[in-house]
Length: 173
Image 1 (cartoon, rainbow, N blue to C red):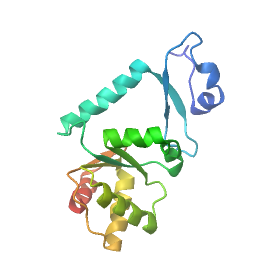
Image 2: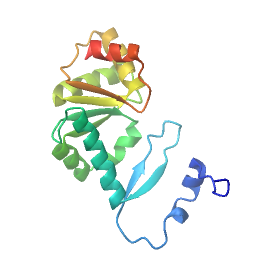
Image 3: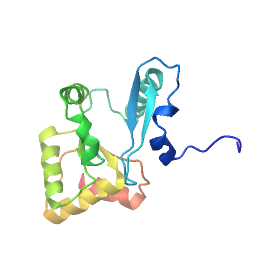
Image 4: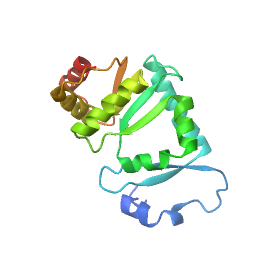
């Protein structure tokens, strides 16, 4: 293993074009990180890997009792993550698959009110997001006296959610 070079985020950003497989001619999907470290990273997925990624996500959702038509609201990322999702094709994809994404990175009282209104307008069955973001929203919503929306499932993701945090989320939602 010592003979293998280490691929760092900075190398990935600096050498992105040169790291692509020279002979590959298929379609790729670009996958961006949320940029929580200050600068987003990107990797390319081929069609097969993209299909596996989507299938494994749906399989996990099914284990949780959800279906392909369950309406999701992802409290996720930063407004820069959403920039590429504002075109017609992306909005159509979100509508067809009932998957909606909203910025929770810049959480404030005003933004919490907007998210709360979005929850009531979309009426999602599932809210998913970083545990810290969900907990931050709940803390502000409780301070503002915003009533809990009717949500069937809350899925804290990408971070550890200790039992006390899970209880706090369950108590609000």
